[in-house]
Length: 269
Image (cartoon, rainbow, N blue to C red; front, side, top):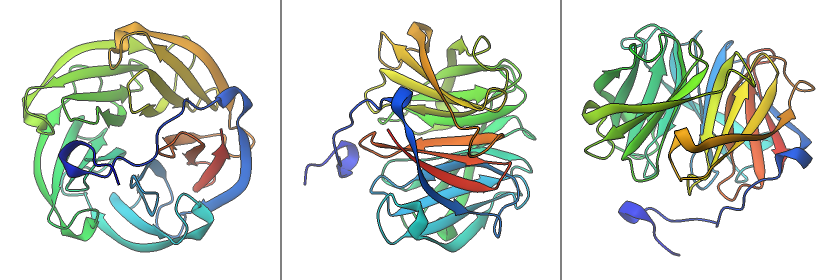
């Protein structure tokens, strides 16, 4: 197996998804027993775990998938409370090796960083530090990192934009500094979920006003100012209040989590 940065398995090669021709797999998984207001989801790179966060439990819930990337095979394992740091968690991200976890929240208007002593095991998480994004947006809704940890992106619904930050020390949010932003307001006034392709030339956003996933091209990789809108895909047939967005590591599957139904939905792209 090929190894990527920091010795993390590189996994399948990404192919840009064709969301214009995406189709619902008729596969879903309810998280209502753990969270009544889910806001974000994140998959382990091998597809054998999925994590969600939400504003009822104020925690991160961890699930095992017996078949990789098939959410119908998910089963709840455990959770970790972030309520001491954030009463309204809205976004979730893990370092590719599973040793760090990040939460965005609209109570503190910040990003919170946690260390995991056992990779991918949220029960071993401990709070490390935070970084305020209040100057850029007071309702942050999601976050994303460049795979090498030198850039962080925060999605906000006050500005309806994505804000880009540079990290002088990879994965250390205390070293973040604001760089620039890109507005999604023309497409949707309720920006909720954010995802980038592994090479940084594609950006995807899910919005709760249009109930769409929107696709953007970046002419310069990881530079949001170079973004241009391409197309969209409606998820309103599954949920009319989509909040979180993710893709399979090869781009062939797309996932959204919705607050309208408290459910994760799976699509082929």
